[in-house]
Length: 243
Image (cartoon, rainbow, N blue to C red; front, side, top):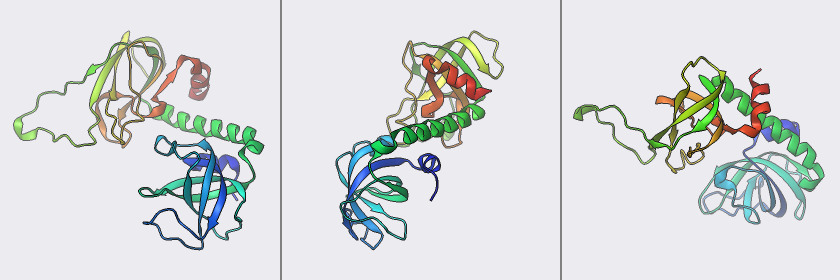
């Protein structure tokens, strides 16, 4: 089995749970099989916003084979979601028998290492990294286009807003001006709700990119990933990862 470090990095949803039923499913749209089990989540260790409310609930785990878990057994599951709707189904990448409390230190260390890896990647991809304070944001006004080329606004439109950052330090890239604008997605749509929502007075490190979360060009340098704004308390971490 992969290490706890690797499993933590690969998993979007890590939780402690007790096995209640084998060969069963909580989701009518996902058939039960010898590899499915119903478990009750007793503690969430790592989650995404969409899965954060499943503490105490019964969900279905599609287990790896061979299945060795027993009814009543407690384990920490490393998973990612594969079916949403009338019941949550997650696919198991691995599990460790026992309570999460018995491996808190290892899980915490693995989670920090995973976060550092993700932040290092965002820093490497950023065109400009600065520290500074944000002004009150305003809706971004796109350049006027002809009626024939007006872009259709979809339900997943980012709703671009911008804020001016008064720069304290330039950590990566070249920028001589004392300010720079940052674009951010103000939309609370599922495609954007985890993106930073800038407020007047926000002070920290800004990782600015020329593309959005999905690799599409943006109208101006933007912070769209949850890691693209880091508070000043993470100064040492950011600077160490930039080295």
